[in-house]
Image (cartoon, rainbow, N blue to C red; front, side):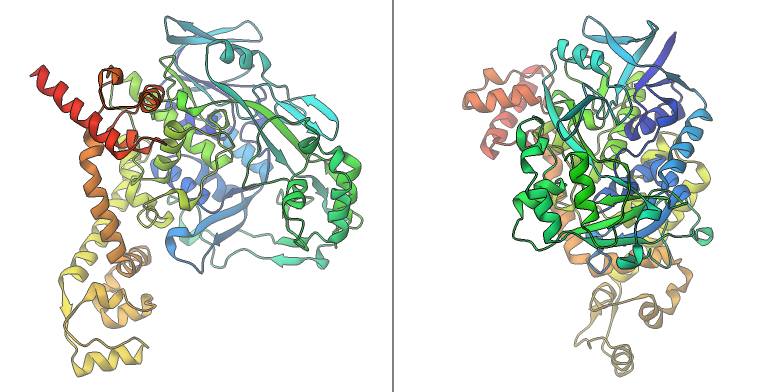
Length: 623
């Protein structure tokens, strides 16, 4: 059976890869071990968070599905860091994990050009360095020009609960052992990573009245730019906050010898920024307590996820430590927490398109690239899917720069630096985070989605009108000034704003102090023509105008380097002045541009300039 694109794995990366591939017109096949587990939330029942919310907004802006699914299946919506600047705020939603799976499976099954097969891929078919298809455990052979691997934690997956070890990709599901062997045999640099999950508790066995209730935001903001805000008013469920105590810590500490993390049973490296509860107690023993978030998994709230208690401790220890927490004295565990080890491919094996360097037409996305998190996976899946189809059409690849999107930062970090631990996105990783805010992801990226046929004309037309209004308003503010007349000074004083002493641009007036919509319209009533979304952008852009201008200036200075491509057949060993170490790194990472070369750890500015000179010499020699 012939396809244009085959996607292996039905997790968050596989979903986005399959959908964009099919929606862009490619005949697509999604192969997954269990069809009913498409879109499963293996860990916490939530989407988004700090920096992760940025990724979801960007996925949505390009035409992905994660934001729409979250709005349809959300149980509670919150903006994290809402009291801080807009660049570091992060949208987060609790989701009904059962309904999320059903929603995603339904979307996939109703998508034109997309077929689903419940099988397990065991072998990649490669002919002279080119992918040609896959073979499944049923002996079925499927041919395709492009294959995208999104296997999550399933490659040679091993679950750990105390001394008990089980081969599994997720609790109760087969691991992908044969494919793991096949990938190693193809010569890829493969390592082992570890992640974990928390216990799930029977809701009727805990006393939430003894905990701190945490409600969702009111009014509630949807994730997707395409969700109608006026009609979006979901019923929200509370989450709860509980705390560990000295008894909890003693129970855990007295069982360190039974913890796979410390006994040497687990070899893979775990996520530094999401440690297990035993790792927290080991590393931060001086802390009197640790916060735990008790989160509903479904609308029925019959099972709670104990966020902050990820563990691989034995079952008796898990029960004892959970019951030591106030409100959980009678807790019954429905599903025990566990750690899982799995294979990943060092992402330096990839191009910025997420195509492998060794095998043409083979793409990797998600945890197989060393990342952790649904959002990081979905972002990679979308990019791999788009690039696979663009390659089929012999069109230019879709590579987002670091100044364009968090997705650009994510992929650039992976392919130029690699990772030895599960990679997680943070706002601190983005140099231009003031430009890459959640709130403007649609303005930054939706033109790509429309160009790829992933966004409809009506939505894009409205977005263009919004963008034009923002541009018009900002042009006025940046080019029109106001004088300190007596009347104007009285008005400023009446709204609690500092007076001006000289002729001042409106952008600097609005950018001072804590301006809101009410103040803006009082000073500039003609701005009433603009929507709330436009005014929100005006206020943010005005407040950070000088800083935004500086970041734009930095980007302009970089553009020369960004535009200079390094030829694929460039021979670094013919360049005098480069150390052996630098040559080896450049050969390993094969950066596509000088800018990409400059991002590689250990590549000095002097080395980049030498490469630049030789590129110019080569160009002159060819003329």
